Image 1 (tube, helix red, strand yellow):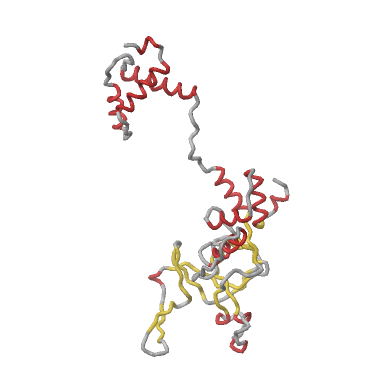
Image 2 (cartoon, rainbow, N blue to C red):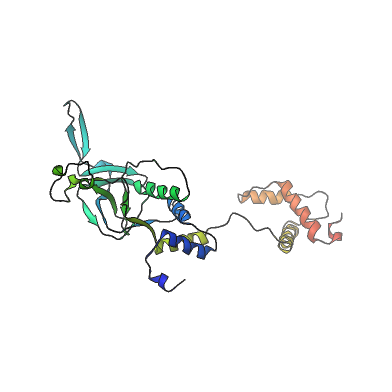
Length: 286
């Protein structure tokens, strides 16, 4: 690892892919890094190069939400609107988007991958892999989070919409009615990976247990068979030369008492294999 690498707080996705390729000694592409993020293995972030406008989101309990009643134009139907801001819910809980809008600085923000930001990452992934067009639309808006986990919903200003009448804009510029939930992350934003997230990912992969057991070598297997027959002979007075023996059932019963299920015939098979493999011929003759 270079000395300059230690000074960096984040890497672009292509640079993160290069770093992972060096660490693991195998090819890692930009698309791989994005897929790790989509699948929840790696925390992705975004560099809002020129900042963005956003509304803060706070966790709330459904029973604590206050509601206002509003009549529709026909005057017959009444609908309830949450007081204080829109409500949305996901697997992590219930959140309320507050009305006031603030400017986020051009820093690095994490991607919760709960709303439209996930679709943006998926779109970029499909572009890199020549996959199908992404047509999914998020109803939760586009979310980013501070390093402390504070959520913000990205907003677009109506003044940037050429079809919107400029006379309908309200003053000041940051008036809540001048904004609406953005459909995507800002065009000038860049996907990145924090060094801390990259380090955590590398550690998780290196510590991942393998499901493939290493076959026993001849010496290891013979030592195991010696242990089996030795415990049977000394612990249960087992006679390897006897044509019939109660030892297999005794061992199976004792194991069952410990919550370990094994058939007596299986025990008999291993005792026979142990005797034939490690005992002198005269010791196993009837």
